[in-house]
Length: 112
Image 1 (tube, rainbow, N blue to C red):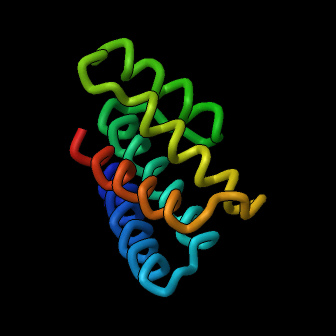
Image 2: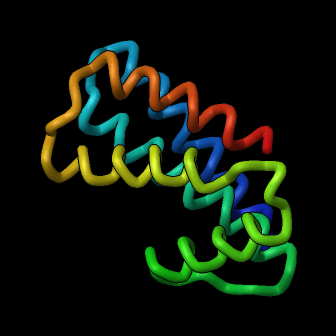
């Protein structure tokens, strides 16, 4: 299996798990799954270009590169939303309605 296919499979898995957790109001765990889904989607694009991303920073740097190549996609804001979800996993500071709204942003990120 190619790396891009593996990352896409993980993206879908995390997104599905996030949806199930949102239904159960498991906002903290859903937050991390949504972050993971976002990071895996960035890794899909990187892998398709022969680039391996292994750190949180490398994902962010690669996303900035994509943003520079395709400013019309406005990738930075959804990525920052996903980062706030990652922080929520550790801090549990976001109310459920914000996590639910952020999930919509993450779902739309896949379409970009």
